[in-house]
Image (cartoon, rainbow, N blue to C red):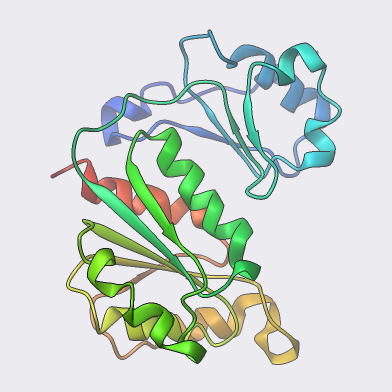
Length: 217
């Protein structure tokens, strides 16, 4: 069945970032058709995001074998873009509960060929976890901050680094955290100037924002 999906293949030439496939909500048949086209050996690097493990499990084994699939981040790619020789991104998360979003960002950077490192468990309730790592973080060219609950990490890190900072509020938290809305409001009202904030749980978007910085170094 042809689902009529039209790719924006010229996007890389326009903005330096290729189109990705957002799998959530798509019929399994449509996801399967796309995965059949862009696996390892196709010569066409495509990133699949929000690809649930339960959906990937329904894809024929011969197709699965052509992909690097990461269950936690729900991402898959067959091929990646060429590795960049300069420019690296630090991904700093408040806790392992933010892992799905953290690793979506990391996997997107891996796919884009951009050097990166993940610094997990840097939540400000134990401030030493961040201060012990800040010297290394500042050796990068951009920072992605991933945090749920009160998302205070974005403000604190924004006051400790001169690097471009991209905050990602996550939907982690009880009650009044309201599925990430409290974290989003906290980041948007940060007193640290110059922080750019992504949508809730949008690790992919943060990685692309950081890539725009690195790609223009």
